[in-house]
Length: 172
Image (cartoon, rainbow, N blue to C red):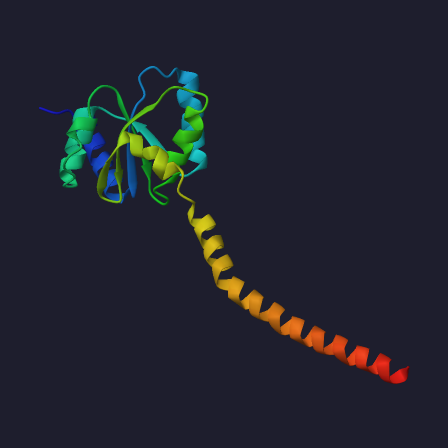
């Protein structure tokens, strides 16, 4: 018979998994307390929740959310990084963290309902952020307008220069 602590934890995990846009399953065994604290701090700065949980509890929470195919990623010591806003932010944090550390190893990713292998996190980490995409869109939309304004201005400038030259020629 499960104890109330585990029942509560499964309920919390079920709720978190249902709200998350992306879930990164990591192998944290081998990281010392200092490294895990640093990683948690970076995740918190980027609005990502990093949680260590028992594999059986994660499996139950996944089943409650009808998430199939995660069993192969739930072996050994497992910590999950949950992103509720930007599904790419855990990948960027992990990529930056792995520059100075060998761990954590990314086992698998649940990205917007699709299960990906852990090695895919590098590809995801290289995706531009939402703000970068918006800036690129604004730049692309404003470029034709800017070119049109410069073209119209150049025509007016050329006309003004021609009139000044004509005036100079007439006065001589």
